[in-house]
Image (cartoon, rainbow, N blue to C red):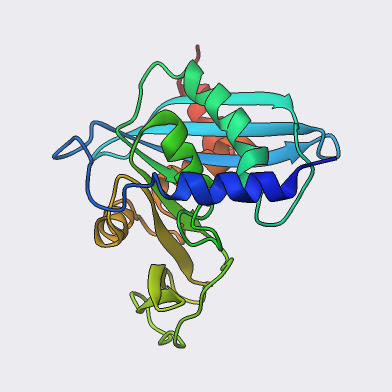
Length: 225
């Protein structure tokens, strides 16, 4: 039996530790990472992929994948407890420790202000940004149907993130601070790491690694270990 009440109380406690102002520790980072978490073997294995990119070139310099037994069932609102153990395992394998991490998921745009980006940022004490493909909570005005359209994501009179159109004819991104970064700076860094795709390069690279997309297979061929 999972103690869901205890985990929710832990989220509320950890959310109080989130630093929502800029405490980056750099002027410009040398390396920026993207992380992606998925599940294999009917959910019994949690897979975390971390892609480390150079900045400002945004070229892949290292990746790590960790696969560990899933320790928690799927419970809405408590996903970070399910995903973070594999993320920490992958993080511990990295030779190039990034100064900024983009997480495929929510930062404080979470009912208890502790999505996976915030939770992971606390665990490894690194600035993190949540870049989610869907909304978990909050509301926003309708977005204009143009690239660059931007609206604040609000919940209970509090801004918990941004809703941003990054590419034509695509659904918007939901961007929120994770840890040790402000909302404005989080949005700025996502914009700096865009190319011509819907997702910023760090999380796009992590997804490519996790899903073994053609771009990653080509990179592997060009960089034999």
